[in-house]
Amino acid sequence: MILEQLFPAKSPTMTEGTLVSWRVKPGDQVKVGDVIAELQTDKAVMDWESSDAGVVAELLVPAGAMIPVNTVAAVFTSKAGENAAEGIAKAKAKNAKLAAGNAPVAPAMTAEAAPAATAPAAVVAAPVTTPAASNGAPAALPKGVRVSPVAAKFAAAQGVDLRALKGSGPDGRIIRRDVEAAVASGTGKIGSSAAKAEKPKAKLTRADGAAVIEQPLSPMRAIIGKRLLEAKTQIPHFYVTETVEVSALSALREQLNAFDGFRITLNDLIVRASALALRLHPKVNATWHGTSVKLHDSADISIAVAIPDGLITPIVTKAHTKSVRQLSDDVRALAKKAVDGKLQPAEFQGGSFTISNLGMFGIETFCAIITPPQVAILAVGGIKDVPVVRHGQIVPGKMLSLTLSADHRAVDGADAAAFLKTLRELLEAPAALLA
Image (cartoon, rainbow, N blue to C red; front, side, top):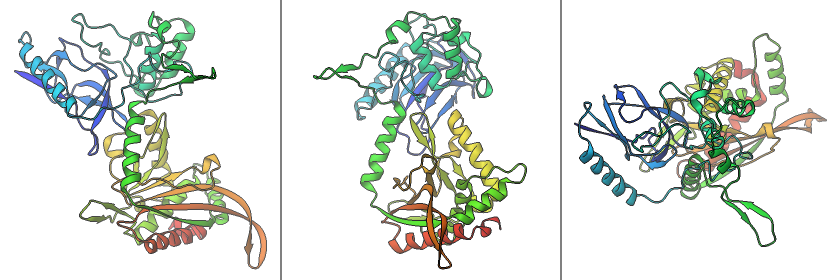
């Protein structure tokens, strides 16, 4: 029996993704639940577990390829020695038909097209330098080897054999610094591919002689670009900005952090205040579904976290039920998992409201783009030391700018203003956040 392995959708909005690396090769026996590949969505890199038991007949998609959901990525047979030629031909025909019916997507960045030395730690799927299968099938990453997309791309660019490395990342995962150490020590078995990857092939020269490097979009950036364009052009955004005097909030944070074991950030306090305010203003804690709007009782707050070459929004569920310290622990743990590429789909899919904070960069105010189907996102700027009037006297103060982007199909101006008013009151009298 022929068993087609269809490239899975790991989120409700996923239409394409990148097959980062194979964990199997033709001839391998696979059991149900075995990890057969790593794939990358617009949110994270995750394992692809087989739902079938069988023998790998052929891998139809090379590592590093960006493909539509439901592409036949591999063909299994139910038993060893079974003739799979007809099944493979049918699978290839299905893939050709599927590709013809999908709009072109940006190709995955390869080691030959991407700058090897100057590129930041981008989440890019690139072919891994491992021996090719004897029948010409795409190279597969050996079982037991875990590698981040960043490390995979850099290893391919430098010609490093990942099987020779020991990972220092979470659960023994090979990360970029492991590859860099192998290159520096000369123990990474540098191959001839390094010479080809030294200079990007997309290097151009302008008429005035200045150099220009055309860098193809990574899969994550291509999908993010597509989604943000849809959100900005299809959602009628409007913006409401409020300034908050946060001297008391800053003092509360300092007092909390004076206790041993506490590490509270201002963002933690803002998350807590937002959760309480959302419960009082359900029209802002909502999602748009075309013919209906769902008002959520639970404040499930998505926190924007910057990761290499993109952004991901892990979710603090039931934030209104958690103390400031619990929120701080949750946010820190989720942010680490996001950066490490270890988030599970349930940890970043959904959410009823998003907070994006650029205050750490000194940004005073900005407007964020709503993440559908949510109807609002809060943009948090940095704290500024400014003179304020208190009890008729001009005294030093600390001001914080908050901007709410709202979907006018579901939220009216009065709703947005009322939410920000409540949020301001909670932040200016922060003792309520400890209740």
